[in-house]
Length: 376
Image (cartoon, rainbow, N blue to C red; front, side):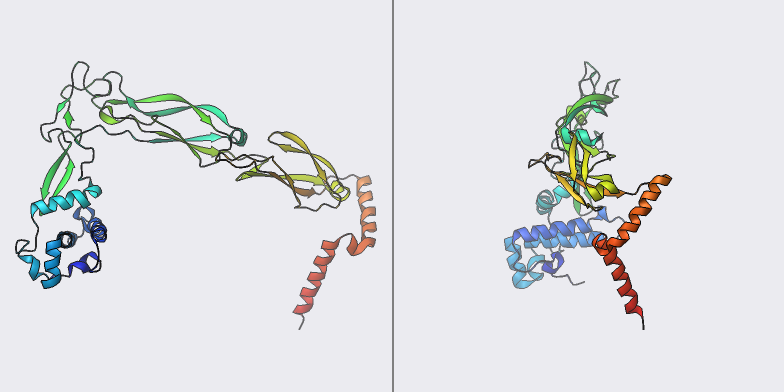
């Protein structure tokens, strides 16, 4: 069977430099690696084809011969069968492929791993989010075992170097035409074995604990903001350093205010008398009550801005504003006297016409024009 052009295999041009070739091979190797495609019998062949192309195009001597004579120019130098030598593949494995499957060392000589990071969602009120607060939280996590100081070995004993991997934590396995570096099955990647495990943690070096932490919430945080507590995550295995704890903010819905960035919004109901004649209202803010002057002839939806009554952002910047949207409320449960007064008012308002109800008049005129246009 004739071979495909190596440049075509990797999807690069003949002028591609080493960086482009390496990037292309990385892409093809990840796409066709047999471990990633257990149900595709053709994956191994495609992976081998991409690796062969990479081996040739990354070698200046082989690439020059291939550019001049095609496959015939490199088949002999590659052993006549189009394969590749073990040394060359070892270089490829460590340089390009190792970072995909941990071939470059992973843990690195069985060294201790860092513990996992943890996330804790903190539910707080809008007031505390705006002004800041300090809260205590209880976080369950894996902590270093006190009985064995995190070693996993019974007190007075110690772990020994794994005889299978020599303490590296990883072994090379030959699978067909290439080698795979994986965690040592004897020590499970630790590089050490424990013959007499700790009775408290059963050789794990870590136990489940719940710790109480104090979290200082700065003013101005919002939902989605995170506070990082360094070293408060899970303890690392084999005495490794702990991870971090990320406290994520979740601000509860407020019964009065709604937040949008650094601004706050609220609805203020007013009587139609105050809307018509004007008046002063007490409006709530996060700092207390303030007077809001309502001018005469105010309509529903009118926004009033109270500057500096919003939120100071946690990342800096000026304080936002409080925007109050007035809603004219229709009175209910009227007595006879009140109804009579309103009837009298309605009769007098009818005399004012468009001057006193400009929006209503305009709306009815629009409706009238609409129906007139529908007439044939």
